[in-house]
Length: 205
Length: 384
Image (cartoon, rainbow over all chains, first blue to last red; front, top):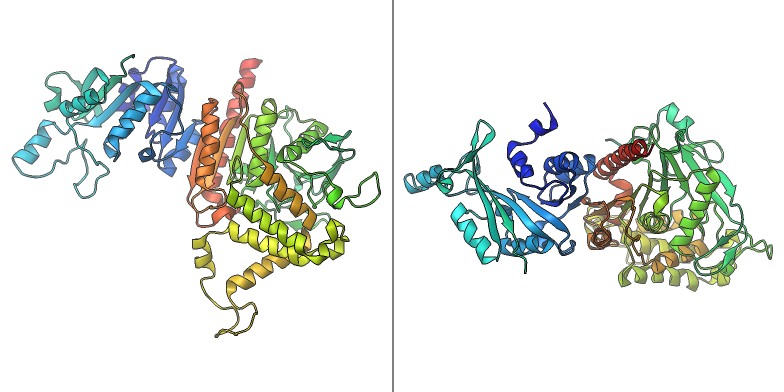
């Protein structure tokens, strides 16, 4: 298996959205797999922020520049416009002060690529609407009382947040998981996608 | 990665034991003074690679010395080093791979020229006539040692606490001579609280009648003052939780309070023991010069350009140089576009954690050095 195949397939999709040679900041970069790929295959200058000690150690072992910090504290160590692209892979929904972080993301980078679980997915709607139970699925695998997710959103709601924050949604991609791999959902994504990816751009003043 | 004191024979064979070298020519200090003759005490561990690419300079903290890892002392007896869990064969700073150099700092009292040395101009001990020093001067002396050893570029400079300050100063003043920097439990500048603790330690030494304006004979040094300074220092090296855990309110060798001014709580006898032990191996004048050098330290990061890689580490319970101060180093480096990594290591040991917390810290430093090594080989291949 090549490095590209080993990369989690949703990360692979995110990496395809990053222009070659970009300066990239990954918020909640985990073990640094995406950043390593972007550095080695797409000639990007990369930096990660991660809370877990295991993740930070793994990043250091990959030779990545990683800062251990809690995103709740914002990005105060990072200068304005320091990055071309800020990647936030399945992390935003775990941050308490989400609106402040979104503002910070737009301060340090012009473009953001955000992935998040889509609560508007049909199975979630059926489970809540018909069975009266909180959704639990492959993309939302947690019980309500034991979940890192503080915010639940749908693709439609997420778009509203972005517009309120003054960002342009350049692209929206719906994804679903099939046997551990991701597939695009082009028809009725807010109903059929389990995962969503949004490319956001800060309008030039 | 487990700390081991049983170094295999091959590792010991590669430990140099105490070495001394007189620097070639005088050393000009930041404050303007010139030291005509400087002797540096140092030790090496491991073997220098043919291309010199595996040299790692480890800088010691306030009370440390050149004996960083297990090896023979001057009498040939094998003694454990002060960073025994980190430096040695198979350890994170692996002496079977890296050539480790550690030197007693300028102004020290454990072999390198300091206030206890003889001033060649007068034939007397320097005492307080020894010029005031900075962290940068300590670095300059070590760079001159490297020159003498024929080492142009280091793979890494690694240090904790005051050693971390030296590593940072090295990066700023000799960025072309080092590929990576590790600063653990360190700071870019002391805050008022840390300066205050240093000042109380100095005041205790200066108030001791035996101090004699710094002109005491070596075997008649201000023992009480230096011991008190060390006791104060020790409190700042531990954490509140660590002390509660280690001593609590337990009494030593007794059931009831004595109702006398004697050492009765365990924490009291621990501090007294640390003070007594310290006085046997450390010099009061050196303590004054070292703490002053730390107080003066006010780091400016290297100018942008071809910078070394940085690993900055802090420890959760360190309140002497807390995480916020390490983050300040990181912020300054990020602003210069440096390749910097930062981690806060979980530990109950306070500031001393950098000496004791070898597993998590070791994993980070070990991985960082390994990558720095691989990257420098890559750069050399591209250059050739």
